[in-house]
Length: 102
Image (cartoon, rainbow, N blue to C red; front, side, top):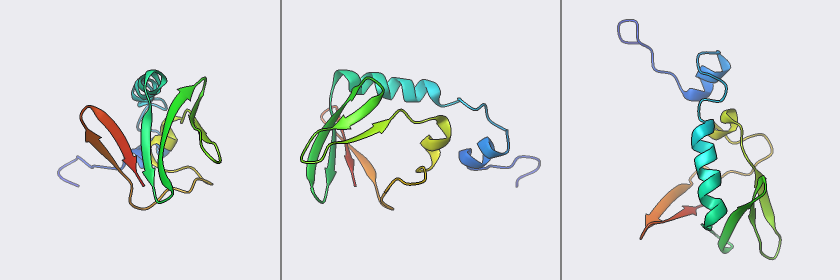
């Protein structure tokens, strides 16, 4: 804490009621819109997969299709229960394209 200013993690701010419940919704909407029109390439140990938003799901076709629903603000700051999020994931941008590396 510096003077009266305290920096807190967004998830804690949501839990404490300090941030509006949907404050990152516009950003989530922008991502959803972007990947409706173009693919999101994800590189994993199992290979590279390209997903697109179809309806309300971000779907990655392949040997076993995987899809994710549009996340609420709270889930944008932490992986929801039941997801298998890696401890080290990152986004790589090359030539105007984004790839998620897990």
